[in-house]
Amino acid sequence: MGRLGGCVNTGSARSRLVSWVVGVSVISMLFATGATACVALPAPAPPQPPDCTDPVCPLAAAARGRGIRVGAAVEADDLISNPAVADAVRRHFTSVTTENALKLSVVRPSPTLWNWGPADTVVAFAETNDLEVRGHTLAWVNESGSQNGLPAWMRDLNDPSEFRTAILDSVSAVVGRYQGRVDRWDVVNELFEYPVGVQAPSAFDRLGPDYVAELFEVAHAADPGAELWLNEVFTEVFPAKGDALVALVSSLRDRGVPIHGVGLQTHLTLSPAAPNPGSVSGLVARLRALGVEVAITEFDVPLGPLRTEQQQVDIYRQVTAECLSAGCTEITVWGVGDAFTTLDTAGQRQNNPLLAAFFSLPSTPLLLDVNLRPKAAYAAVVAALQRTPTPG
Ligand code: 9MR
Image 1 (tube, rainbow, N blue to C red):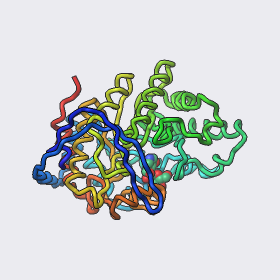
Image 2 (cartoon, rainbow, N blue to C red; image 1 turned 180 degrees about the horizontal axis):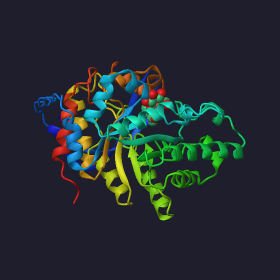
Image 3 (spheres, rainbow, N blue to C red; image 1 turned 45 degrees about the horizontal axis):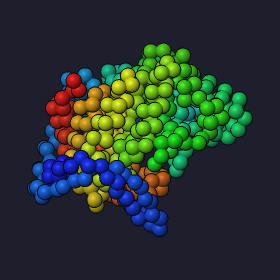
Image 4 (cartoon, rainbow, N blue to C red; image 1 turned 60 degrees about the horizontal axis):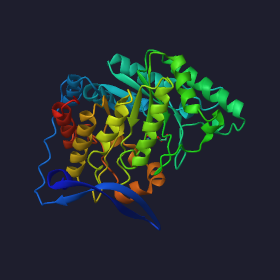
């Protein structure tokens, strides 16, 4: 891709007003970016994707060799109904994230109904296959545009004490049930509004002003051995969200709140442009300096008229290398393969008009193709895992 192969960043910061015309609406955002001088270079050929019939494929092998995790979001139904999916997960990945199974809307759809089946399936599959588990997610805060994982009955509890009982009891029950079996939890998901990094108003405000700390404490009490994470979206696009994350994590750590990691979702769906060089590594370094782990937790890079397969490959390589160079401990993609991406669903496209405007259908955003074969992007991530130096 030109940005990587043929452009020189001069380092002088400037602001660029980007306007995206989406249907009848215009969405304008201010970006800070380095001035860039480009020379025309021929695009390098994409790396040949490795074929893998081995029990442990290059992606998992490279991650294990480096001592980090590569993961995929999975659904229990897909693991059960499609042996090829189960096979691909166990050979290519070392970690699974519950895509929907542990959202409270799935686990506790009514006050008296606990639906453990999907999560039990994913956790048992992981144990059988020596995979780690990221439990996603206990409190999805920002409600803008999409379901946030809260069941309607909980959202409708306007009485603060009833809401408090419902949420805190549920968090305790869910984390407690999987004590010692789920390695890490996305305790709080999508806390901040965008583009600005302020806490989004939500049903969770009924818990009081310090509810983030309280949720971490409750989860910690239910499983003191589990890692507890904050998970945030679009930090590579909106620097203010990164600043807000750093400030919040700093305050939580200063107060001794049990927070162990920060996930950067990295859904690259707002713009066809690659993240500004340094935007990922810079934030990872700032967060790690606070004493927390950092991971890419929901990576996907859809294709569209303005993003070619070669650019997809380069973005996967660039972002993975940046993350690893600053000390990331996990790279997780949001789906086992292109047939399972959520980005092609109608709901996602309605909730994110930029996704509908800029990216193809199908968007083929993942590392394995529709037949679960490794793509060129897979080879690029493997190369980044093998070659990126660890931070000194
Ligand atoms: O992929 C998930 C999709 O199947 C659900 O319908 C949707 C709403 O619950 O959530 C999707 O996953 C989201 C994740 O939980 C949080 N970050 C954004 C993900 C993609 O929308």
